[in-house]
Image (cartoon, rainbow, N blue to C red; front, side, top):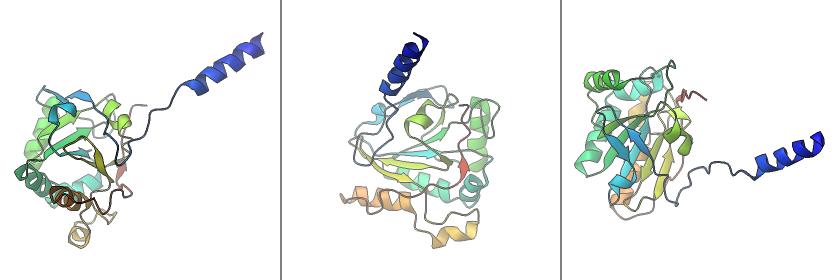
Length: 201
């Protein structure tokens, strides 16, 4: 009897579908999460607009590279000027490296001069897990139909050296330009690099 119960439990476990990983060319996962200003943010609220998602950990040296060189802020500002919605996401759990509450997030944005449309506080990791975000930064570009068009690193050189930024292919900037021109994204995926996202589980 015990063996039968064990086998049934095992079968049921295998029957539960795993969370589907995001797929290029498919609808991006919707979400609902509070931002640093206390406003609820969702992907569906931006239907008709191109959206960039950027995973952030202020204590990660790879993030520090792009913010210290103003590369991230410049790309955020460029995107905003083109009507693109740039959402920065912090999926660090309470007590983990880089986790911020609303006040700390707003102080960080002010300190670095962030130009994102909103800074999302995803402490339970639901948004991060839905997108299978692995690193900070990990970048996603979603077109105005809600379709995922790019996911991976912000650029092509995985380093913490600011001097590498001008030499690298800026994948997010390139993807946004190609989407604006009505073209297929020439590099739809790349290997994300940076610090691991500090999930609670």
